[in-house]
Length: 160
View 1 (cartoon, one colour):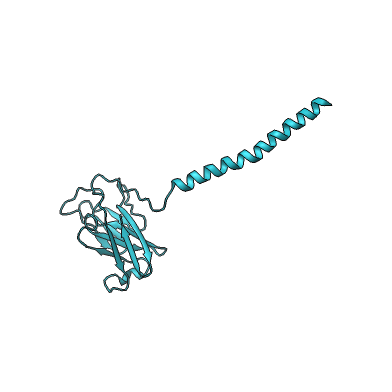
View 2: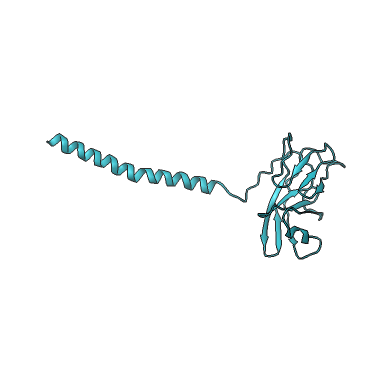
């Protein structure tokens, strides 16, 4: 009888530890994943393009940028010290994205300024066509260099 009580006590202790420790371990794992990932982080590691710091406001009320109010439209912003060759801002339909206006798979040259075509951008150096939805071009090593784009009222704030 004594051994039966001892086995029951051990069983109860093991179950209590499982019920307490397992949720704590799960919570720690979830927290480390949640805190380790950030939607604001953009991987801009590209040997051809400089990692420039800038911030610009794109006012959707201005005629130059009013097309961005509609999904699938894009504009090129050519401001001094903004991107390597200006920036491209695109309305995906669910938000805004911004990319550098330079070809990501070419050293800066006279042909390395992207040509904008609504929802794609083409590099004249190698005729690569990049999707503005995801920045990718088939068969290319580097995607378009992406910047943060945040809508605040009628203004898109693009920064790096």
